[in-house]
Length: 285
Ligand SMILES: C[S@@+](CC[C@H](N)C(=O)[O-])C[C@H]1O[C@@H](n2cnc3c(N)ncnc32)[C@H](O)[C@@H]1O
Image (cartoon, rainbow, N blue to C red; front, top):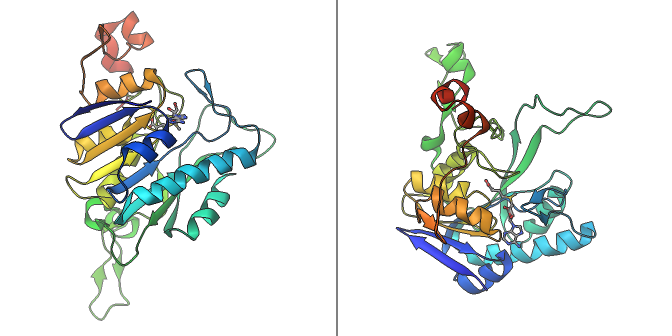
């Protein structure tokens, strides 16, 4: 059983991803899919355990929604998948027979919190960028340009050219993306253990979709994908099984301001409760 909420091109489906994908989304209808599933590493999603009995059971489950996602993509569609570092090789090999893997992205972040002492701590998460057909897919390179150090910062001149020319000041990002994780003091923070940064989704959506395209996220969590899609003038479908997180989505997407008689508002942070007037001092962008 699923429940659907919708407003102005943004749909939230409260239910199980496999169920919703198979029954509620037409085949070949989606321009871009972003999938950030449970990683099988024991996170606590509002009491729902992110742990399967074995790696094989977990991967068998992943292969089911991966197949459905491939089915839902348009022939010109793209898909980005995140997974734990130890599981990504399986997913990568599985998908190679179904999609073209164009980039293997490393989302890198620094961590000043818990740090491993007896081995090298994990400071990245892998992301696969795949397309259905490499001769027809969207890639808006000009919309995601970043500073090129040689040209923009060091202002070097390339003397190997017939007429010496400045190096380009802008470039398409490479496959290592340094984007800070969402921390408690950031404005976008929501009460969820694995919220992804809006900046990460903005890059993906700007590059791999066009205005008004339809974007799907089968494991929406705090609905970062739908939120970024809305900011960028795309349409979205987000699926999430936990009611607590569906409520975050309803609020972030301004679909409802009240739910079951409760006003939907962001929980004040501890420092906001203590000193509301000093909120700006504590908050990071
Ligand atoms: C890794 S988190 C996604 C985080 C999200 N990208 C964000 O930025 O907030 C995975 C989400 O999948 C949800 N989930 C777990 N099992 C599910 C299922 N069978 N169907 C739909 N959602 C599920 C969890 O409640 C959790 O919120």
